[in-house]
Image (cartoon, rainbow, N blue to C red; front, side, top):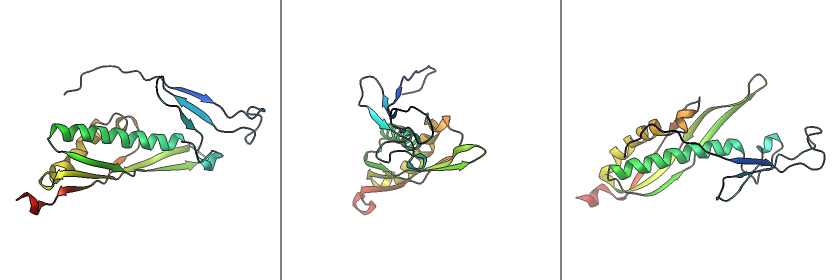
Length: 166
């Protein structure tokens, strides 16, 4: 399946719910609570990072950015594996994003590293399964949209060790 030129539009509603009765009278007068809604889908609850007076029980934008990068990479990787007849049975990524906060620029990400742990059926496919990460990175819409490095350090294992494939 190839990609053709096309324009896609995504509509998201973000509503601040943290007015404690004083609005933004001062920095400590309001909560950072908000909801993120896409029509027909479950509502996400958001806040800022706890370092910035946020609620640690809610998703923050920084986490969602790292999640978007990891999710996009995974979806492209699974697609490429299916095309290559590599059967993936498990995929878990514990991605880490690093953000630097300075007085001059505010905050900005310096890198995100994806750490996918993947199980495939056949050990003989591990070399090709490893190379597909590079292509998944090239195709990831989100990675193509950020101005910092997105790296990956995959660990691929198989359900059937090479000795069983003989």
